[in-house]
Length: 79
Image (cartoon, rainbow, N blue to C red; front, side, top):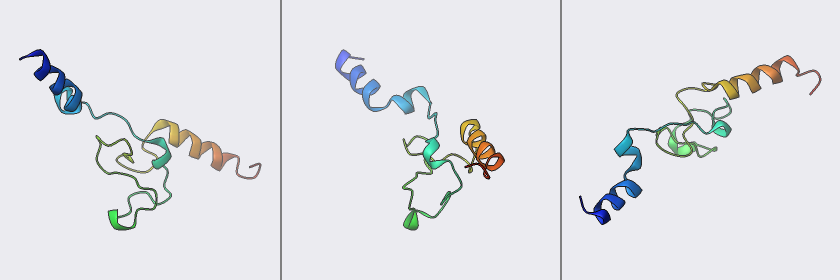
């Protein structure tokens, strides 16, 4: 590899190179419009795990969004 070629590889193919597509956008992991087809997505979420707006494998799949939902449901009379 040349330094320029390595730089291009690392800066443009990082997710492919390391095999990491980690992370779910918590704003899009709630059940409101979750999983709608791409034509009618109001929340502009992606089903691609490598995209920055990835909605997750299912609604409330992340511990943070699950905890928020549980808290809201437990305190809905006070909120």
